[in-house]
Image (cartoon, rainbow, N blue to C red; front, side, top):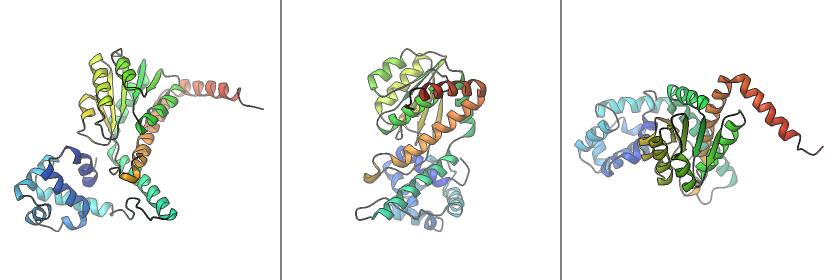
Amino acid sequence: MSASDCLLHLRGMFPSLRPAERRVATEILKQPGEIVHLSITELAKRAQVSDATVVKFCKRIGYKGFQELKIRLAQDVVVKPEPIYGAVEPGDDIAAIKDKIFYANVQALQDTTRTLDNDDLLVVVEKLGTAKRIEFYGLGASGIVAQDAQQKFMRIGLHCVALADSHMQITNAALLNKDDVAVAVSYSGETWEIVESLRTAQEAGAYTVALTNFPRSSVTQYADRVLLTSSDEETVFRSGAIASRIAQLSTIDTLFIAVALAQYEHSTACIEKTRKAVADRKHS
């Protein structure tokens, strides 16, 4: 993540902050353009915390102090203006709903391109391409992403499964070994079934990957590599994980295409075989 991604970094760190630090973060996220002009005492007053808490907050999120935070924040405000659209609300007409949903999805994709680390992607691509078995774990909307991943990687000849049942996830994870890869998909990174499945896979010796929105979430403790998406926290009218699902799917697409290109001849041959198999079953 570049130096000008202060707000993305802050959103990702938010769940791991202490209550008083969250009040500081909330004030910054609400009006980032104003915060760059405030003194440490003025920000502390707004957040109803002490000056010392603001200093601790800055260090917790990786900055030397309040001055560096303001510099990074100023760069972010210049690079990326505040969103035009907010959350979908009661009374919104269809035009407003369309604009807000599409804007949120586009924003999530743009933010995720800056959050995803290219080196991490390259390592995961190499591991997936050489794995004897790949398992994708996800529940709910993340389970749909896991199923999409299975469908894609299976078509290029890789041995993979997507498990949506928590018992099956853990029992299968226990049978993995050093030649296998386990990928956990979880927006929050705190779904305990997914965390336990990845932990079990890592203890079994498999290479583990977490696809999540939060860099200090529980699932990342058991991941050899973490792939970070970036989308705003889901609201009551976006509880179906709309923007976060789009970011997850796009990350899976990136991994899939990269693996397919690395094994181009084999991948295209497999895709052609599966295409013909499906085509033969269509009505004339």
